[in-house]
Every structure is written in structure tokens, then in C-alpha cells.
Image (tube, rainbow over all chains, first blue to last red; front, side, top):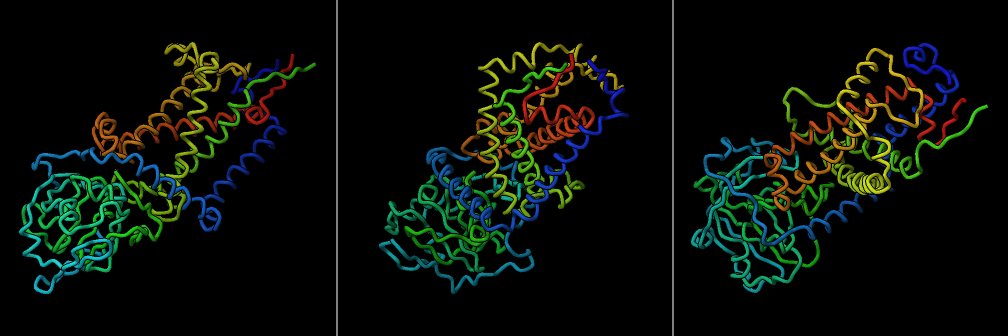
Length: 247
Length: 203
């Protein structure tokens, strides 16, 4: 048995072994480079990644428990100031004109009469203090008030067996969610933030609040909604973010 | 005359390399995800070491590679527990033996006579590595599903607590991997052994 104490071996690493090691570590290094640059732009790799994202949509739909409630918090835990989030900087927040505003309905909905704000405000309302989790990782606790989305969908005669609800927004944002999430008891069509009418930066005149999904799945400034069976996609989802994005 | 002995079973070698690839993808993409909203304001990872290009790309890699990491890890852990591999290779282990071997290793005096038998420093490192990976998977699940798996997240202080735990478990895991790779560089004949499984032992 050769003496193989590290202190003895270190100065005189056998050249053969060293060469093997260097050769193999080079290939590991090359692999990581490949992963960083080449693979990302490679079409086949992109296909695999998108396939895995669709698989993760199915897994998340299966994991989603329609009765499981997101944790609620005392009002003392509300994050102040609540952060702004959107695909544009806060300085470019759209201000929707209250007097012209109408919520248009489309797709598999019986009563497609547009809704004006006073009519929406007259609906029975509930509040929630929940955690908004951004896809970037940060989170913040806020208080939202509005009508249960499931009640609204029933009221307008939406086909609740359809697969998706899609949204178009006053800031050219668009989004869609699965029907199971739309019918979740904590999914609210909200008009107030922290007991005040939603300011433009939090989505005036209305934001769909879904505490069981990531923040970007909570559309603001909604002007149109429709019930469909083909996935309408979404602003971020069409750029590569996971569609289901459930919490 | 030299004889060849089997050091690593095929299943251990295969899962080792799949794990190495999965960990590389998870860490590199995870660092890009971290950079989108750093837990420590003054600290971000160099973009050159990250994978995915931008947040959506990094998330796609992370949520694809997690399956590879988890399924491969499950195969390895089940095998390790039921074949006796863990018991044979990683036990017994005592704090005194670990301290002794670590201090010897730091002085460069740790004997490495028989590569088929792990010294106490190795046993501790591999055990903590396995545990840190399990912790990474569990805290990762809590971050991914803080509502559906809220009971799990609550054990870690909720969503934000799970983020910190995920970060620290990653740091521990990366530290052990770095030491592991340095040790392989210092004792390079261990490297081909993890590929062929065999070791030529001088009489």
C-alpha cells in the first residue's frame, strides 16, 4: 500500500490521475457552459422546458384543493406601504375614467349586459387579509374587499363547467385562470384596498384577488371578462411564465 | 500484484451523476431566481454563474430540474435505506471521530488508505449533504405551494421563513459540494472510481 496521506500526496499528484481528472472536470465545466448559453437558446431544450411547464400545470391543478383556504392575517400585519407591481413602472400607471367605465362580459355567459361601477359596488361584499406572493419571490400582506367571484359568475349565468375565465384589462394586460380557482371561496372581484376605493396603482376600478395564485395571476383594471374552453393565455404566461402558477 | 475491488455500486454511481447534473441546474437557476428579489439587499449572484437568462427561463429550468432531483434522490434514498448502503458506508459515526478526522484533514494529515471505507469526516459530510438536499426539497415545496402545503410552510415560519431556510440549506449544500470537489482534486484517483465503480488496490 502506497502512502496516501494527503500531505504526502499533494505535492506529487500522479500525473496520470491528474490528467484524467482535468479532462473529466473540463467536460463538467463545458457542460455547465453549455447549460448557461447554448442550451437556453436551443429549440429542443426550449420544447422540453415548455413541456415540463405544461406538466407542472397539470400537477398543480391536481394539487389544488378547492376547499383549502389561504392563510389570513390580522390587520396589524398588513404591509405598509404595499408595494406596486406591474409590467410598467409606477409612473406609468393607467388611470381608468370612472364615468365611462363598463365591465364587458363575453363567452359562455348568459347575461352579457355590461356592468357599471355603482351596480358592482351594490353587490354583497366580503374582505380578506392575505399574502400576495410575487413570482419574483417577495411577498406582502394586504387587505382587499369585493364580491366573491363565484357569486358573480353564478349571478351572470356563466357556464361553470367551462374550463377557463379570461380577462382583458385597461392597461393592455391580459390574463386567464382555471375555473376551479375562479370558484374558490377566497377568489374575490375586489373594489377596495385597505378599506379605500382601489387607487389606480392597485388596479382601479377592480382587481381580481386570488390568494391561491402568484401575484401576476391577479389582473388589475379589468374591463372585460369571458368564459371559454380554450386557454386564452396571459401577458406573462405567453412570455414563458408558468400558466397555472398556483400557491 | 494488484487486485481490483468494487467500491461503488452501479446504482450509486448513476444516481450520483444524475444528482450532480440536477444540482448544477437547480443551483444555477436558483441563483437567477434569487437575484430577482434578493433576500439580502447587498448580495446577488453573478449573472454569469446563473442559468435561464431571465426570471421566466430560470423558473422553467428550476421547475423542470426539480423532478430530476426529486425522483433521482428518492431512488437513491430508498436504495440507501433498504440495501444497507447507508448503514454500511455512513455508519457508525460519532462526533469525536468527526472532529478528529476533520482536524486531521485541515492539517492535511488525514489518512486515505482505503477508498472503499469512508473516514468520519466523509461520513459526516455525505450525511449532511443528503440531509441538506432533503431540506432543500422540503423547503422548496413550501415555497412552491405555501397555500396547498401551508402546514408544511408553517413549520418553517411560513412562506418567508421557508425562503430563508431554502437559501441557507442551499448555502450549506454548495459549501459541502465545493469541499467535496476540492477533496477529489486532492485525491484524484477517487474520480474514475465514481465512474467505473472499481478501484485497483495495491497489495
